[in-house]
Length: 322
Ligand code: NAP
Image 1 (cartoon, rainbow, N blue to C red):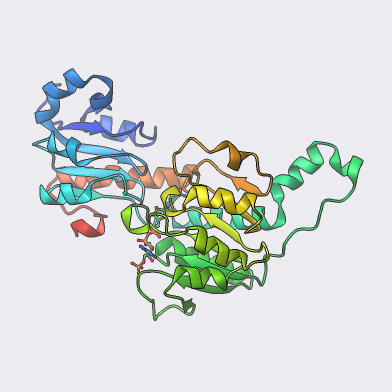
Image 2: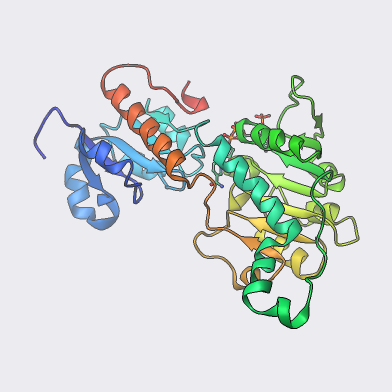
């Protein structure tokens, strides 16, 4: 604990085994000490110079306020809505994240979920395993994905990777974002309800946080359903982007045709009403969860820490800290 060449680092979550050895080699690591042992944490807090976090970690302003020597927060994830960046920035604390290296994986998953929801792949698997195929014959017919209309909510790094893949499916693509992207060939629809009204699939890929909270509400879901129980909602963004109660009601009431969800309002707790619906496809927040991508994210998160303490520019600061 006394080696002055190794700064003290607090982890804000159970970190990836791909990241832990890298930070243990360079830091005195205090693994979630603020939660595990508040008295020991209070004693060592003045020495803590770094926080390592995951995309779903919480680093609130009151934690930052208790760390007078804090210099940097490295998030292993592109989303950093759990970090009070305003509080960090006000103190001159550098916040970094891991954009780009996970674009392919999250976009692959979005297309996979679209196929699962439209072609009912989990139900098809159950149909075979349960013996229904032999006992009941062919499955009910599904919905076609190729050539359908795709609305993408959020046209950033991952949104563009989703659109590129959807081109190969011959989909008719439109999007919403805070601002239009004139360089992109797809139609910009400023209003999310208007986008839903002209989409067969609505895919969410914005950041979480206050700016997007409940962006998809009952009105947007009604527009997606078009009064005929159509439309499939796919959420690979954050659970907070959807009013989950309104979504459950829309699914139970047949307002929309189905949903495929990788993220939820209160992870890992998924409402029983959602889990009970066979036309809902559920995944446990696995957007970036491949070996190759998690390794790239861990390496980038570790690199940002290493560069900061070497007095060099970090590779991927969050936009607010650029
Ligand atoms: P990004 O490049 O920053 O893109 C975010 C997009 O969202 C931008 O187009 C932005 O619009 C748009 N946006 C922001 N606020 C909006 C609002 N209020 N209404 C409409 N659009 C809004 O981020 P990214 O790298 O693509 O990542 C996006 C998010 O995906 C992350 O923040 C994270 O929450 C989520 N994610 C999930 C997983 C998973 O495991 N499921 C994995 C990785 C990421 P402008 O372009 O006009 O600014």
